[in-house]
Amino acid sequence: MALQVTDALVLHTFDYLETSRIIRLVTRETGVQSVIARGARRSVKRFGAALDLFVSGTAEMQVRHGRELQQLTGFDVTNARGALSMDLDRFSSASMLCELALRCSAGEDRGDLYDALTGALDAVARQSGGAARVEGLAAAWRVIAALGFTPVLDRCASCHEVIEPSEAAMFSHGLGGATCRVCETQVRGGRRLPPEARDTLRGWLAGAEVVPPDAGSCRAHVRLLREFIQHHVSEGVELRAFGTWEAGFA
Ligand SMILES: [Zn+2]
Image (spheres, protein in one colour):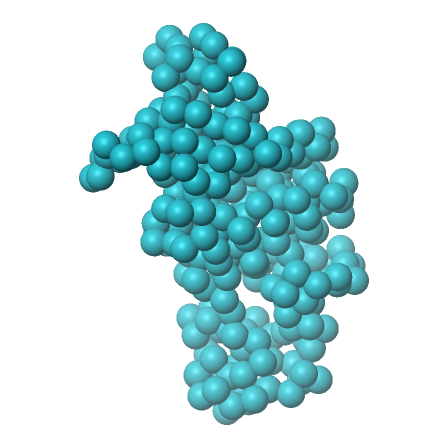
């Protein structure tokens, strides 16, 4: 067994037997991990508030290679993110983002996912109500990028021809992004994005300040996100928190 100390964020937690908890963490060093915190429900001294959703800090684990469940021996909280639980829209956005990481991470990760997700949750925590929900939409694209599925926006995803920023472009989930006029004739089941929608996506991916789209455009963006996730990231896995978050846009 080796002691591992790493930055980590709590994605999911549930009680186990009388006194313990099992926690899913995304770590900076080793991607998503399942850990057991023995005695966590009997004594709050060792783990404190560490076992709440969305907190991040320094995790100390006893790691045995090849084992699926590692042992958590300590957790120092550096950011509790209590604000995320005080607003329903914040909470549903944060839950959706954690679900994406939990269900869709392939496990090989070099800290990108940890950084994208902690940044995403902090951005959501700064908003409230509908703005927190839209922030979740923006942040979901950055989490998807960290999972390795950045959509192509400024060149044709098929022939790599530059697409002018002022042009509408067909977005193909299968090809992973926008397509030029020539290649779009081969696209089935894509969505035509007006230039503003591509601008918005570009801004969201960069983490830039973006003027929030109107309600109708937000719903179109949510559909695009859902289709993209279904095609590339979730591979048929049901995303319940995503459904709850999405329902808030109706
Ligand atoms: Zn093309």
